[in-house]
Image 1 (cartoon, rainbow, N blue to C red):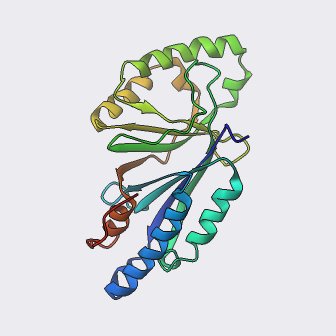
Image 2 (spheres, helix red, strand yellow):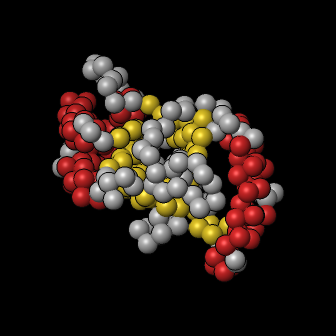
Length: 230
C-alpha cells in the first residue's frame, strides 16, 4: 500500500480566549506545534494553509500525507500534546487515499504538493443512481466533465478517494493562482450532465497556501522571529 498514500486534511479553530494569553505562552504553544510538524515533514508531505478571512468556523488547515495511517495517527497524537492544541477544536477533518481515476489516464496516486496560491477543498458524494448506471455510460458522462476541466489548465486537481474511510466518497481539492478561474470552472461544471448526480459537495473551504510559521502567526496576528521553513 506504500504506493497509494493517505492524505489527511485537518481544519483547526482556535478558542478566542487563547489570543488573550500572554504572548510568551502563545509563542511556546506554537513552537511545540511547529516542532511536531517539522518532525513529521522529515520524509512526509506536510503543508499549511490559512483560512483567516475566508471562513468563520476554521482558522487553519493542515495537510499531511503518509504511506500508512499509523504515521498520520502518530502526528496527531504529538500535535495534541502541544500547548496550542489545548486551545483548538477540529471542526472538520477529511481522510482520503490517492488513486487513479477510472475515467481518466492521468496519474493520481503519486504524492504531489499543492503549488498554487489558493487551495479549495470540499467533501463530495455522488447519488446512488450514479453507481447504478452501466460503467460505460458513467465513463461517457465523465468525459464531458473532464473536457470542461481541461479548459482551465491553471486549475490543478488533487482529488482523493474516501470510500469506507470517511463520511464522504471523495475529498475534492484544487489549487490555482487564480481564484476567479476556479469559480468559473465550478460554475461551468454545474452545467454538465455529471453534476445532476451530485448528492453533496459542501462545506467548501477557500485556503491560502503559506508557510506553517506564517499560518501559525496569523492565528494571533503576531510576527515570528524565526525564518519560515515549512
